[in-house]
Image 1 (cartoon, rainbow, N blue to C red):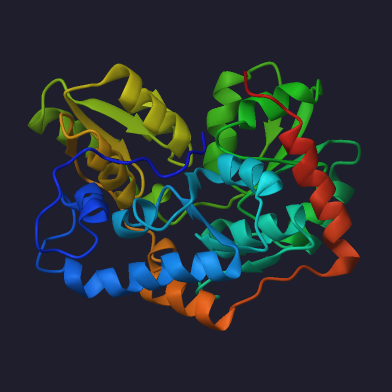
Image 2 (image 1 turned 45 degrees about the vertical axis):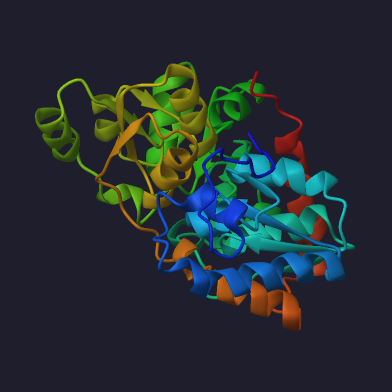
Length: 338
């Protein structure tokens, strides 16, 4: 679920710059560090007005981005949905490259920027357009569902896309006995458990953050914190999901925590997820372990500011494949999860 950045009702600290914004992140940013961040935040807010720009930030962004300069936050599905209706000339994507490409596909006339071109994704790197053509030749007539965590070139070779938030609904929408679901092997296996009536063929791609979690990690947390609620991302291995109390996309994780309000919770995903939910839910104790995504952490206030100042780095999509890739994303957006 996407949302504009919410105001967290915490008491501003006198003497600090931008005290209302600092109140949103005071649990995660020491007061001594805030004066060094505030000039970049002030500049970004000014540049957004001057450029008629909006910032779309993934749930894995650090709190100082997520809670202060982002206009729309959410998981991959939410950002894709919101990108369609953004009323701005410029979109800055605080996330990874495939997300910026998706925003560009859905907004071909807008300028889409990513602050660091090195913000990649192990899943996107695990498969090529040639690989997809090879799969189609090997399995003629089998629909191909491609995870949104892929390049535009791969999307263009697919029938439709999915995210972790709508993967089950997308597979069911095809009414097919057999489906190719690429490239995330673990996501496909976890969807298979929910849709046993469909044979799901997989590809051996993995998220470098989620593949590192093990069932032993979950058991260790439960031993140390009896009664803790464990929530896992479906990019985790199936045996990790089986050890958990709930599994869902980052937006579903947030909704679960806010609605169920467990006293103690561990999010088996990227570290900033817990920080961003904790900032708005101080009564819930978040237990870590977590794993850091090196690509998401390439985003910073400093390079977001530079991106808006210099209008770099602009993300483009080859016109020869843009229409086909856009069609795969738009078909995904037509599938409702509820």
